[in-house]
Every structure is written in structure tokens, then in C-alpha cells.
Length: 95
Image (tube, rainbow, N blue to C red; front, side):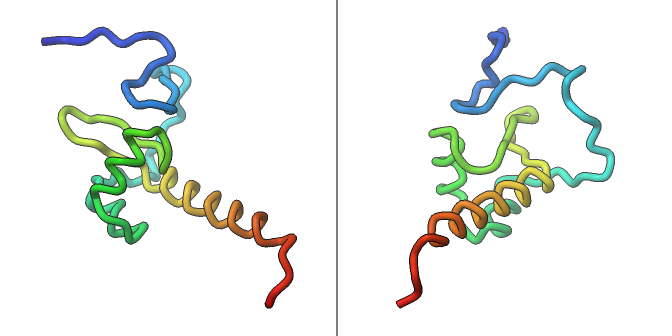
């Protein structure tokens, strides 16, 4: 069974659809599995699946039946998490 893609929908909540022409080439990047990303962020695979379901976490996409991540997307997401945490605690004085 083949499903047609709806414009603006990638099949994952909160993640925009990208046309092939709008995606930058990723020749220097590594494609990671969900298990590799789980090990990288030190979270269970189930947590990555949940984040994907609710549209949070690093950007992911399907390749056939598997979910894949670009390494740079994961590291960018981790950096943004760190920055958010630093900004959240910037106004708080140490105890």
C-alpha cells in the first residue's frame, strides 16, 4: 500500500516536510539509527520513539521501515537543549 505525502506533512508531528530541492546535501554527515541516537543522548529507545511521536527531540525521518537521524541534527538538538537549560538557570542565583 502506498501513501501519498501531504504538503507540509512529513508523517511526524511537529516536523516539517522538506522537498528534495530544499534539503542541503549531507555528504560529510553520518546517518544514525534510533539505537545509536539513544546511546548518544543516553536515553532509552522508547524515549526517542515517544519524542518522535509528540514531535520533540532531534529531527528524524523514515528510510523504508526504519527511523534515521543525521548526526549533525542530533548534536544541534543537544546544543539547543544545553542552551535552553543555561538560559533557564541564568536568572537564578546559586544556593
